[in-house]
Every structure is written in C-alpha cells, then in structure tokens.
Length: 228
Image 1 (spheres, rainbow, N blue to C red):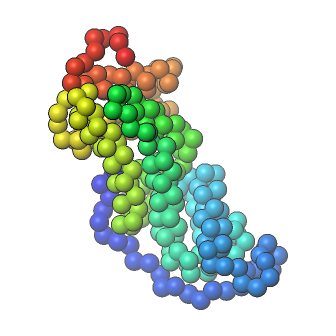
Image 2: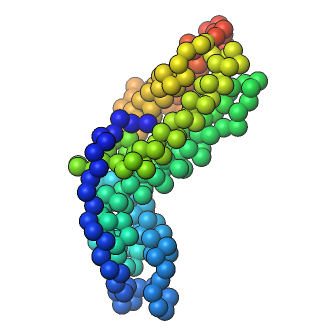
Image 3: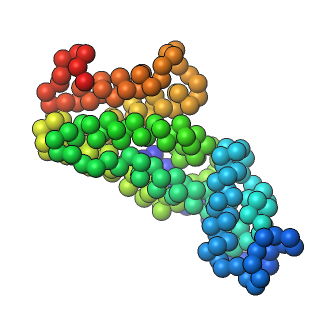
C-alpha cells in the first residue's frame, strides 16, 4: 500500500536463549519460544499504543514481557524485527476489517462500508496506523513479508472495484488505478483527522460525504447531486 524501499536492513545474528530474570512470571523450565515471542509482541504493541512508534525500546519491551533483553534479539533479530512483526499484525487486522462480503447487487455499498471501516481502524489504532503509513522510525525499512501484507490489504479494495466494474456500477478502467484514487482520498482525509488538521466540526459527516462524492464520480451512471 506504500512505496517502501526495497533494500533490506541487516539483522543481528541469533544468540542463544537465556533464562528469564528472577521474579518473571514464567513457568518452571524454559518457556516455549512461541509463548515468549507472543509475550514480546504483545508488550511491543502495548508500548506502541502508549508511546507511539518512536517510543519503542528493546529493553522496555523485554521488561514489559518479563524476559531478558537478549531474548528479543534471539527471536526477532533486531528492533526492526519487532517493527516488522507489528506491521504484519497491523495489516492483518486492517485487512480483516476492510474486507466486506461482496454483493453483486450493491458493490458500491461494500466499498463504502470498507472505507468506513478503514477510518474506524485508524481512529482506534492511531499509533499502529502511523507505524504502517508514516514510517516514523529513521532507517527502518519494511521487510518483504510486511510489504506483501500491505499489498494483500490493498487488494481487498481492488477486488471490490473489480466487482463494481464487472456489474456495471463503476465505469470501466484499471481496477488498481481506481482503487488507488479511492484509497488516496480516504487515507488523506483520515490522516488529516488524526493530526487535527481540519476546518470542519463533523468528521463523520464529512468522511461519509467524501466517500459518496468519490463513488459518484467513479460510477458508470452517476446519481444526481444530493442522492446517495
């Protein structure tokens, strides 16, 4: 969904597991790698929500999860590994909410609902949204896996547009280009809202009108002004 650089950032070599620090809430024996990884990712998500993308630190993530800092390197390779895991989580969540059951009788309704859900996700997860689209961490480059997750999310909108074209609700054109126009407008409005940059008082009404205007302009047979 974003034009990320294609070069990959080198990651640190894995280091051996070490035992959790005294007092950590771990079961006797060595906790499974999956459980520790999930605990670290959960801690990272909590800190992301609390401090934003630039406030993540490996020591703080490890302390929140109750493991030693070297455990983070062992399971994620580097801080970039944590950031990429968060990106994959964010795009998976976004893909789930923007995916609307296709309806050949009303494909534009599905797009309207999906883009409404896009904004709702951003407002509910502003720090994650910033990590996904603003790239606030200097020197960080998303992994191929994270970029594929982003593309898969965008393809949900492409699918809805393709259905609209096939059913005659949208005018013919390249589905990717049309989907990009819709996303660009909705993303722009959402980003401005998150930054508090606006000269309107009713963001809900504004966003709904924006989506209606977009789809009216792209429709094969536009409805008269004032009709939905």
